[in-house]
Length: 220
Image 1 (cartoon, rainbow, N blue to C red):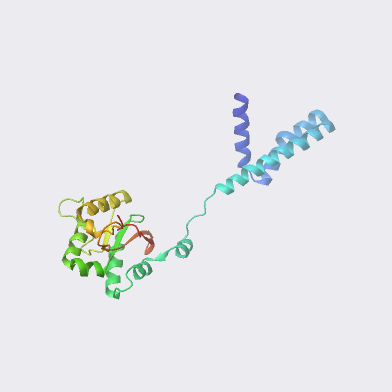
Image 2 (spheres, helix red, strand yellow):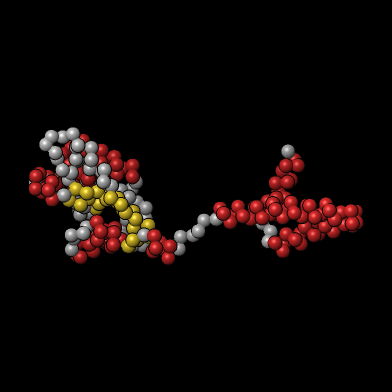
């Protein structure tokens, strides 16, 4: 056990050295002492030992490089994610610039990586069930599980900020129980349309967002 501990410490030390530092260390620690003690008889041993320790050094350095994570620079984020405005223009394709600016301002207050539920109304559902009923469902999304008249939508009835996905989908379950007609049920007769389209968005940087449609959100 003691010998294994010593070997691990030596190997860890070797992995921290650059090639020049490694060669210098090995020369003074192994090559010169062995040559002074055994003369030319030490040359084969030194050659074999140098190759073994050199292979260990290369292996450790390779693993170290392989485990390094590429830092997320601003350029990487710009390439990987859309701007928040672009995301909103995709989600609310029929919205005016004024509405997009209002939604963008609302999202700017959301902490990075907090999930945001965005609901785009289904006009066919509204025609069947009235706009007042649509507002009632959206109001429930805004206030369900909250106390003291708090809201998670800043009055938008479209964009709902949650602290985590657990709460988001807990609210969905509550709304499904409270307003089952807001959800599409494949087995229902006659067929009932869903109340809208759901999108999940997260801010990943200043005015940069990741988003996707959850096409099963309003499906029972």
